[in-house]
Image (cartoon, helix red, strand yellow):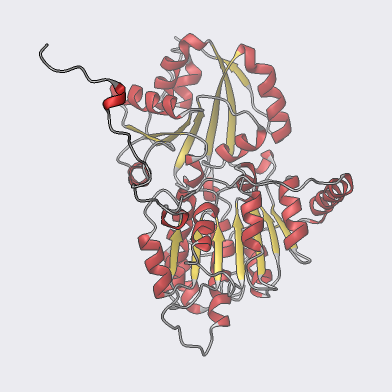
Length: 463
């Protein structure tokens, strides 16, 4: 009470002029990682839209079915001995149809458009001849320190980029070439360090690649071969414009290889702008009659959903469960774990190390169940997943096809089970029609025989 009262006028005025100013050059660069850029999209004229429709229809009509070729080897297709030996070590003794069709065209230097679902062997189809072409292009040349890359492979997600690298790296190493991965979500120092030393083949996602180009740490002007893997999904994620910008930076006349599960208008637009007289192939046997995947739709009451999911995943073998949101994926993984079923989640809220570790736990068989969101699941290429469960049905038919492609890989059999409520039955029917898939709709309740059969458990016959 004895302290003198201070009024606002007694306080010294604060000066902001003495503070050090930060110039625009001093501000840290913003990293966009894997996120697509938003820019001003050009307004498409009606004539342009009609032109793309014509291109789309022409591409659909010209695609050649990739057939089984009896007694053909990778050596017969034109690949060198070291690459053929490495492919055998990877378990690829003889080529799949998409490989037998596309490898000779790629070795000839042609642009290629190939359609085929996940598991049809697309990575080797473009990876092996890409390595061969880069090797031929460097014949007689010394591989200098700090050399610029000669090939670029673009993928929509980090997991898929890592999966592609796991296949291509041993093929490249067998002939003395080096690969590196460039993707967001991790510090860029190691990636920049690899580029400074010099690499031959880059595998990465569009966002981080554009970041390093803007920072002048990556030069694509000597790239002679570009692969767009899962181009349809990259277009869905908003990477169409980044893909176009990247393709405009590579060497004039560079070979373009575009692999996609579906052919939509965005993909047709890419082909029209960047591919020159492409050879076009699609995998034979994509129709359901010759497919190794069985499809079923279970019509359930929402209150029974948790119990039905527990029953389906309590089985031998690897199971992949799709959830619409990250929170639901985590909740399901915890639910299964609480019921004694080893499960982990895979979604965008996890850091890259945890995502890689969880996927590896499924691959190694340390967990039975992986619960994933759609974007995270793009890199799930585990050959022995024999059951895919869609806890949340997809919103469009392309998502259904991509999810289904996680099972029935490399000629193995698999089952896709979708859970729907009665209110969504009509929408599910329309989606299956668009995907050209026939699936029985089965009413299901906890304890029903159909759940036991899908989980691979014996059903006791009624006495």
